[in-house]
Length: 130
Image 1 (cartoon, rainbow, N blue to C red):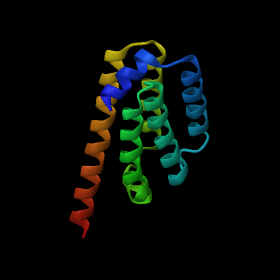
Image 2: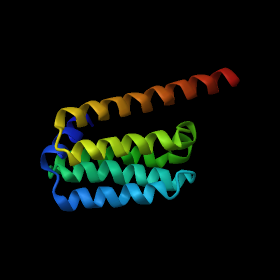
Image 3: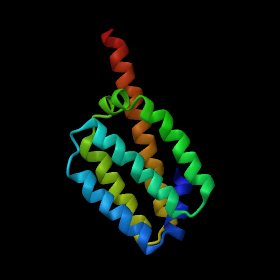
Image 4: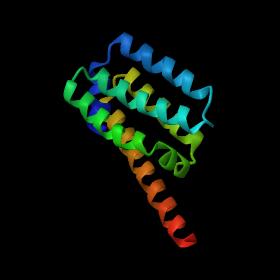
């Protein structure tokens, strides 16, 4: 995904930027609902891929999120970071808006790593409790 963020910063149209901005506004309206968060997360990453104007990136995001969405309730329950993901998505949007591919890739890498570590820690704690 860092490559997708980088390419989005290079190729996003004003229409792409407007769609992402509107999605961030809609996301902020309800960060409590697991389904809303999951849907907005998927839409954000898909819109970023679409902003690259590269169908391979779009298909990669669709395949990845199809797996995630199949178990979204479990995943988004473990990712109990309602405000953090929105903050990171806003940072990514700002990088794309400012046409900064290196920063976009860096922010996306941190975002993905944080999600990965959060899921690992939550699963480890869950295993300890069982």
